[in-house]
Image 1 (cartoon, rainbow, N blue to C red):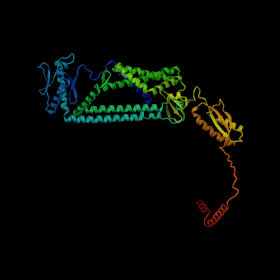
Image 2: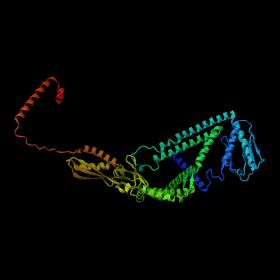
Image 3: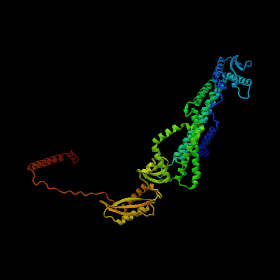
Image 4: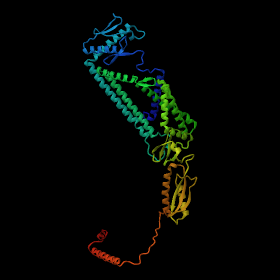
Length: 566
């Protein structure tokens, strides 16, 4: 394959996002990322048909917004008259330079408009040149030639955008999406996940990776279309004004401080920055814990459960400490939230008692290790392999290949059978009964040979047979065998029963079914019978015999039986 699969691309993508967000956190901490309105003095833009030409400041009793609005309205009014050529003049006879358009006042250049190192005259000439160039450009954009040219450019840009978006979809279908079948879709098997190769990527992980690339594809497509539409909107004066209005609305909505928190107020943009910093923190801590587990802890030779626990504790600790640092860097004064945090802590403590209970139980399971990942356990009627032990819950994969999430306290409050504790070798007890009169030595020989012939039955300890009892209908035996794979116990029992049935038939050994003897004790009948009863029974017998003779002559035996039934 010419392109790497998603299992190779995903770590690169994840690391890139992580370090990008870390860079943003660093920039935020050093103060290089400043709010849009965080300037020394308020300014307002001079706009001509959607293009920002320059910014003006407040002057005396006139605010920057009022000065800009007056100048913008004057420019729009003159352009709407459509009387070229439009002239721009500079009047330097007054105390401050005045820019005129078509002989009418447009705006004055004050000392607040001049940056450091530039004179009033230089600033006025600069603004005059910008206005002249922009007006000439605006006049040209109103000609039919420009409109036709811009329309053709817009169509070409839309076509190129469509082709790029389509090619990205083809790339996804051909090189990324099929890897879901290769990496995640595995044939169903009765073998528990713990016995499968460790190099196999779980299906859930592969699904998450493919979902991540799908979201990335959608984001890239959206960015391409937004950039194309933004470029097309700037080709035409009318749409340029609309897009400028939309940008201004979004800008004001994002940067206006409307959310009070502590002693300060924050904007929507501030919360977006905070969310980005927290996401970067989570990705960074995951990367650190993954490196810690794969590079450092794996070299220590510790148990897999201990490695997972250590990495998990380090991850949560880094997230907690990092969150405090991020909130401080973001500008939130945590000391102002002391009372609120105390009340919230009490409420959380009362409402999350169950979670705290499961958390403590999880720590006991992790450090005491009565169960470990890969153990085959039975708890509350569920049998399966332990797949994950978390601080709140434990995941068990049952024999039906169903994941069951159990609270950690269940393993401490109820009886748990751990078939793999210290040693996976366990004993199976297989009861069986034979009929009375069977050759018991032959029965014992068949049971031992059948058990030894099964490939999952261990030869040491060797199978044993015990004569349990004389049952009501059978002679009851118990076959004891040892196995090293407890999760296969039901399959092994089934195989042994099948083989024993075949062997017993071959050897003539009968497997009885339950039998019961019913003894009826006769009671004495009355010694005298009523003469009327004897006479009635005789008449009934004669009538029945006559009716049977008559019907036997007119019908076949089947009809006769049917009529008798009727």
